[in-house]
Length: 541
Image (cartoon, rainbow, N blue to C red):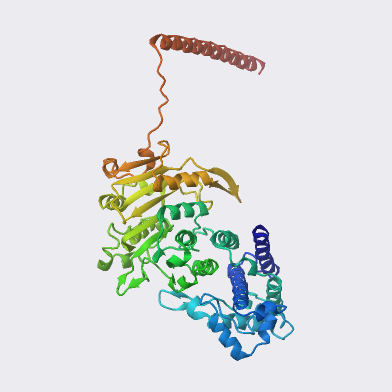
């Protein structure tokens, strides 16, 4: 049943994309907004109906809950709405998809359609709005007909969207959890969350990497904890950690400069029963204006995960970061502006420092880094590694396979920080040769098997090593290797040496010498034949 519904949901997404294409909006910059907002409106509409049925038996007996809704008084409706769960979006009786479907004959339907979306946004602004760093609210929905350039096509476009939604229902899967919705979410955003090379490009962390990070971080049951991502993107890392902890046991905090990503993260939170965390989604520049605070100090978190942008031109605000009040946060320093290629500025080094500063006294973190960070000798890079070792908060590193991220050729690793204990030893896993390579569009991508994922996790949480790709190393050993975090420097290479007697050695050398003589004679004969052919050619000229 779930497999069939997954297929049906993906077909709905494809149908909405087809509507956009039919009206000239395929691959348009606004297509992602249209698709994700229509998907969200339908999800919230059906969740509203599902909760009405759970609260009042009249809605179960009617032909459709929307029809029953129209028959109750406004006073009754107000009382009923007050009883619904706080994580359920509120709709008025004239704001359902069914009501829009039945109103398609009105003139200027696009205006009614847009007004409905705006009114639903305003009605639910308090709980469902994303906030900017300057405290402005980004509401749920936009008037979508504005994206159709031809005024004569606006009504038809809005009707086409409604017609795709009206015969579909999410009701059967509201009891499903993370694993189901993560698959749907990945399909929904797959064309809109690629590394486009823009400012703070929205990197998408592969599900396998996210799962590994979450399982290593959450190695025992916890409750009432905070989880933070300072470069959240669409929230893949946050969702995996929240699922590992239990959605009811944690509160999510995030910040990302991208408005598109913040909108996608909000959708992810709604799908995964984390509506209570939406007020903590901040759209803004984390490094320049970190938004989450306790009183006047930056907030400290129990878990931090991040896949920050690796390189980016932040020269516009670089000097604003280099201020006395940031000295403790950016303890290792702020990268300078290169004479050439400003876009190559190593912004991820600032995110690592910000994350270390943002950890609570018992906090734990997992950070995706370019593999070059593991051995880099520049002052900032090495200074960060030294701090992690000297303060005994470095718990380990994983070198990931090439092409684990299909959209970037950069080799990546994951480092783990743990302030909940004294780390006199650290785990290193060399997974660079793990996985199976497949082709995704025009790119190569490496997929890890479940067994490989489990092996990596167990090396950290169960101390199970195989000596060929995993090992536990003391802090003293790491210091002796110039604070290198490269697993390959600590994992012994299996010896291929074979013990043989002196007689066997002499016989083998004699045989090899004979083979070499034969090869030399053959080469000499071949060379003579070639020379003879050249002479014949010269004579015929």
